[in-house]
Image (tube, rainbow, N blue to C red; front, side, top):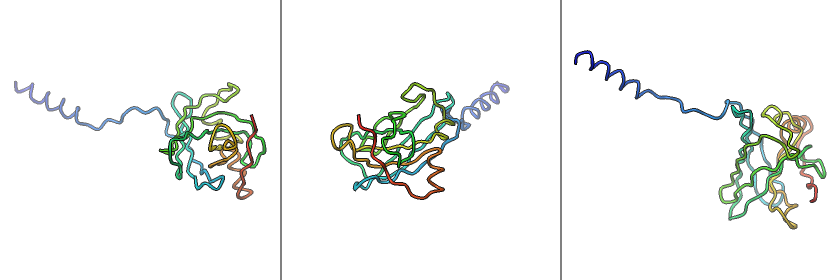
Length: 167
């Protein structure tokens, strides 16, 4: 029994140690500002988080949204000023009630595989629309340049938001 008691104490100590929970992420992430794109006072951030599986989790957090709407999110090629920019990927919509959206992105609309390093180097922008259809589709609640477009924005100053390509 003498030898058994220290064994139990060691087991108890091992069981009480802080253990880091497993994570899906590498620890690399990049955050960009999203600015208001219309008379609606909506702004926020978009964060790209590198996943250990090679994909990217895209997290959008907006302030100034409310209600039951779901605002479409487009990743466009080019920068915010590029007129009729092609959609590179559709992201999950922002839920107006929470101002949040989360998408795991593995490929672009043309099925080209895209990794974290590719996204953070892409000449692109993100636009959050008021609606998917009708005249409200052309209202951009918020947007921001990402990757190479963000680097270009820093060197040239503030950008304006161009309308998106029609369906």
